[in-house]
Length: 403
Ligand code: PMT
Image (cartoon, rainbow, N blue to C red; front, side):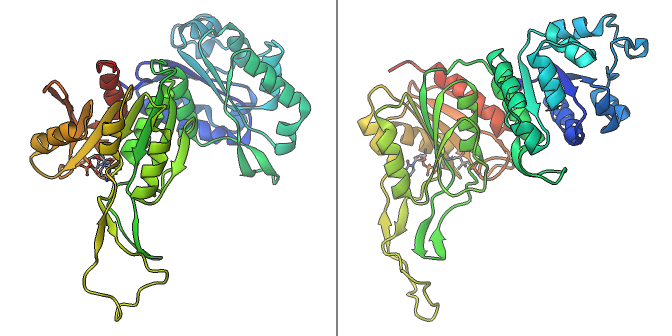
């Protein structure tokens, strides 16, 4: 499956602000996803970032002047019109107060602002400026107006800015802008669906500093939650301990133990359309948890275990309208064990994950899985990025018979 940005024509607009240096990294990320990127800058942007850098990274000349014949090497005689007509998306990063003001008021006095008036494709504005400028009522009014006019606005981050002020105004990181654009361009085929995804490991404490756990990073579950949210679903992500950043547009419930995960899932279960359980839940917990760190000379040689609730199995018994998707992390006999769990837990589909394979399973950015269905069929998928796999899994879920 291709990335949503693959082969898309993206015009990256760069304005004159200190954050212009980040546009080079953003451009690189778009190209890495297979997009074709053309860069248009304001005149002052080129005081902050070199034209040669943007041209080298995009593989084509940069347009900064409506009347510059030398920039017409891509055959576009009237660039602002030709680029506007062929663009699948336009991203302005960074967008200065000046550019925001011009766009909000329909002013076209340079290449970028003229081009933007001719664009009908989705437009993403990433404002970045001094905090007082950003909070200025005129700028806020202009941003509100742009939002009403259908521009997607990415709120700037907060922190210590290059100009010395502390507060909002920082251009979000290139990967955050990439996520916004990806979400904005993804078809909303899961709109109105309530989806709950579980992710990560559970930690079952022995004492305040020790626990029973497993190596799950949460990447698979976070990728599924992000993909479902990008596709318009109303997503809750119940995650065990991970170091991953909160995915945008998702309700995130952080838990530690299997029992906490059980409560968080079952409280929400009745209203769900789809439950996807990619979390690696510990089947057992220590039957007692000491209040203080256990001293090694006083510790027993054995740990007594109590069984945790099987969340998915209970959901399988309780299910009505919900589609239930499980994962099976196995080290051998994938088909036998995965299909056993499919039946035992009353699932609609199970994702069989042979975690001993290279680049697959725990912690990797990629995964290779086989999907097993209730009718006895299966689909073995190739190794791919977890972000991409998440979309393929959702495609299969959409094709499951409705309950
Ligand atoms: O997080 P990553 O590093 O990206 O790794 C991804 C992954 C390897 C964790 C993921 O792809 C995966 O395989 N998840 C399932 C792990 C697992 O616990 O499998 P299992 O076979 O033990 O459990 C079967 C199913 O029952 C799972 O959907 C599990 O969430 C669920 N279960 C298990 C035990 C329990 N007490 N309650 C449950 O709900």
